[in-house]
Structures are given as C-alpha cells and as structure tokens.
Image (spheres, rainbow, N blue to C red):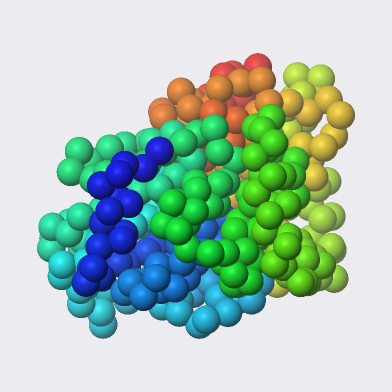
Length: 321
Ligand SMILES: [Mn+2]
C-alpha cells in the first residue's frame, strides 16, 4: 500500500505539479486508473496532467471526457522541473521510455502504482505494489477514497473501465470479491454501462473476423496442452488489423478445453519479435527472464531482437513441456 507521506504529498497546498502516465501501448487499465487519479486530483484543485507515450487507440477515446490526455513528445516538450511523476500499471521502466530517462536527467521524484510484480527497481524511486489486486483501479479506488474525493461520473467511468478491462469482464479476479464490491458502488453513478462495454469489447470488424482464418496456423504440442502461433506483422497489415487482434486470437485459443499454455510470436519486419506467453500451470517469470522480459507468473512476455526465432521456440517448448 502507499505511504502516509505519499498521501500527504498528493494533498499538499499549494499544489505541486503532478504528471501521471502509464505504459506504452496503453490499455484500459492504465488509462482508466490514471485518468481516475488525474480527475480526482483536479477535483481537489491540485495541478495534474496525464502524458501518454503514444496516441491512444480510438476505442479508449471515450474515457477522457475532460480531454486532458497529452502525448509526450521528447523533441518538442521540455519536462516540467519540480514535478512529481506518477506511473500507473507499470512495473518495468523499459515500458515508459524515453520519458523515464528524461525524468532521471532532471532528477524528479518518481512513484509507481501497480499490481504486477516488479521487474527491476531503481532504489531512488518509490513503489506501491499490491499483486493481490486484479487491476490498478483497485489501488486507485482506495487512494481516491483516502484523498476524500467524492466519486463522480467521470471518475466512476474510468475506474469501471479499468476493472472490466483488466479482469476481462470479471473473469480474472484473483479469487477476490473486491472488483465486484467496488463496481457495485461505481454503478450507482454510471448511466451507460452498455456503451462502455461496447467501446471496450465490441471491437471486431469484418477484416478482423476474416483474420481468424490464421488460426489454421496454430501448432499444437503435448496432447493439445500447448498452442503455438507465429504471426508476421505483414499478415496483420494484409487484413488491415493490428496486434490487439493477435491477442484476441490467443485469448480464444485459451478457451480450448485441453489448452494449458499459449505462445504467441509476433514478428516484425526487421526480424525482431514480441513474445507473449500465457500459462495456467507454469510460472513464466523464470522463462521470460532468460529473454529479459517481464509480466505476471501466468501471463508474461518479452521483446527479442538478438536471438533466432527457432532457438527461442525450442527453449520455450522444452520449458512448458
Ligand atoms: Mn493492469
């Protein structure tokens, strides 16, 4: 949990300047939790901004009702000195570059609020990590309560989006009733739950549906317990779709009855590739550490540029078998 001094800092008057951010390829959890915190601070008349590391996916645009998101551009933006930087849903500083290195140059304080185990730690930073939470929103919900900010529609909508996104509609709840009890309270202020669900999950297109034909390429090992899928970026382009579609596909495969582990390799045009692993029974951390990757024990990944795909595949399969 976060410290009393952090709470004091957030409440401090006159307000310090807070910059909130989340990981690259930002998702519903990082955005929802970060926006809820940013809106809450602004409601307290604190100075707060939200930087993203790239333009957000259009499906998330509805979340920023107050239009505060800014894309961080290292060439054009000078980082405000004397600011306090807060990263949500981030456990690995490689996911927040080049922002993180530029913060280090000006030696500003950095806080991390997350529900993933840490990948690496800079001892000058501050960490508030609770891996029992199924989304960052659970942590931000308590924080907003402690800040004594009353929940309003914009805050509720973002916390709700974050929770339903990261739990995949209450499927991955880490055996806790907390996501339900929080959402029960948020629902009192949300008028358009169906709209949020549609924006976050009704994301198929005819092209994406056609892309599912690539499921034919899945290779199965160990009596169908392991599924392996290798996709090229060019194949995604061919169907006018993006990498999120590949993850949707891997989620579908996970629902096959015997499947225990899934391996997705997304190969870029330059030959480097992104590895995404899911497993019910195996701890993936020791495996992805070999590739300098990170994540949770049952959901992890890595970016690989200096090893051959075949070698990596062999190593993963022998670990999972
Ligand atoms: Mn998350």
